[in-house]
Length: 80
Image (cartoon, rainbow, N blue to C red; front, side, top):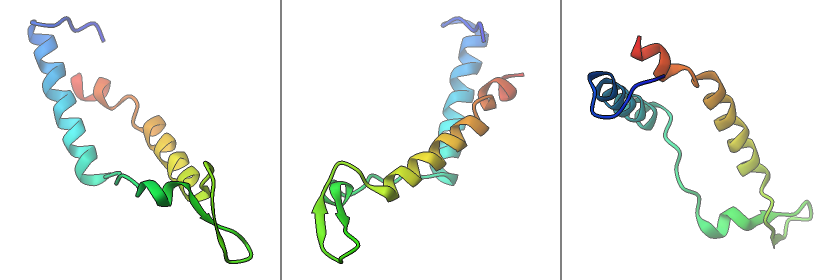
């Protein structure tokens, strides 16, 4: 989109961006993980270990990436 700042098109894009961000925050909230739980994983033996890899976080990131890919043209569509 070629909307320049301080123009009617730029102002419209700012408003549309704000509306999309509010919609996404309401309907697709992403809660911040607990810092310890983000690196603490349970082993198959039932004990816990600290690791930078968390399978649940990876699954959440895949969902987020799919959502971003699905809605990447939202601003463009709303600005028409």
